[in-house]
Image (cartoon, rainbow, N blue to C red):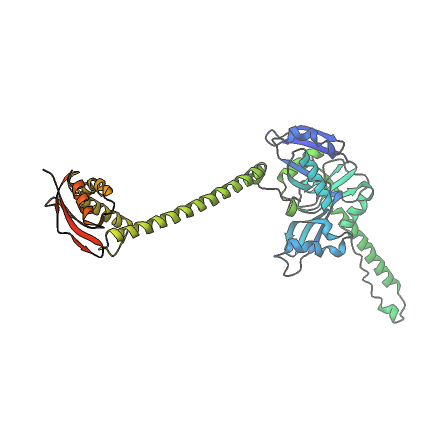
Length: 425
C-alpha cells in the first residue's frame, strides 16, 4: 500500500517536503526528516471501524476492559484479536475505534526498525477540520474522508458515497391515514383519498428538505450528483490539511500495550544491562561489607570480654564497669601507680631488674610481692626446694640491691622465707 508523507513546519507555516513511498518498507527514506521532529502516523479509516456503544450502569470503573465485550455481538472477529480504543465518552455513550492488533503491531515494528518513534497514531478522518454545522470532507486516492463529529468519521468509496450521505438524514415516512374504515368495511371516499395523497406529498417534501440540511464542507472538488449541501472551503493540499489536524488532535490509538514509554525510560533502556550488572556488584559489595562488619563486631565483643576479664583480675576492688572509657581510665591509673613518679623508682623498673636473678634460680617461686615506694624497698615472699636456693638468690640479687634476708622455715619439704631489697646508694 502506498504511503503518503509530508513534513510540515508550524513555525514557518509551510510544507518542508512531501512525497509518497511505494510501501511501508521504504521508511528508511524518512529517517533524516524524523530525527528531530515529532512523527504522527495516520491510520486509514478504511482499516478500522469508528462506532458508538451504550455503557451499562456500573461499568464506568472498568470501562476499558469492558468495552470489547460490549461490542462482541456486533463484530465478526474474536474481540481478543482487536484493539478497542475509547475516543470519547458522552454520558452513557462511548465512541470507540476498533482495529486489529496485528496491524498496529506491524506498523509500530516497521517504524521501530528504522528508529522512528510515533508520537501519535490517529484515524486519518479525525485529522480533518471540525465543524459544528456539518461534516468536513476531502478526497484522497479516490476515496472520501469524512469527519462527522469530534470522534466519528468514515472513509467512503465514491461508488457508495451517495447512499451513505442519503442515509445520514433519511426520513421515516409515517402513514397517518386511519385505516379503521377498511376494517369496518366502509368505503374510502374521494375526500379521504385526496387527504392521504396530500400527506404523502408533504412527507416527500419534508424528506427532500432534510437532505438539503446535510452540509458537507469540502476541501477538494465536490463529487457530481451526490445529495446533500456541499459547501466549498479554501482548497488545501490534503496531506497538509491532515498534518495540521494531526498536530492538534487529542485522539490516538497508542494506549494499553501500545502506550509509548516515558522519555526517561527510553534513555535508560540502553543502560539496562549495565545497571543490572552494577546492581549485582553493589549487592555483592554490600553483602561482603555486612559480613566484614559482623566479623569485626564479633572480634570487638571478644576483645571487650577479655579486657573486662583482665580488669577484674588486676583490679578486683572495682565491681562495676559502667563504660569502656571508665575501664580504660582505671587501668591507666593503676599502671601509673605501678610505674611510680620516675623511671628509676617505679615498681615495673624493680621487676625488670629482678627478672635476671630469678632466671638464675628457677626453683624459687614468688608467692607475694609488696612494694613500698616511700621507703624505697621491695619485699618478696618466696618458696624453694632447699635453703641453698635462697642463698643462690641472695647472691644473685646482691649485685644490684642491698639484700636483707629474713628467717627461713621449712615445712612439707618446702623452704619459705622473705627477702627485702633496697637499691644500693
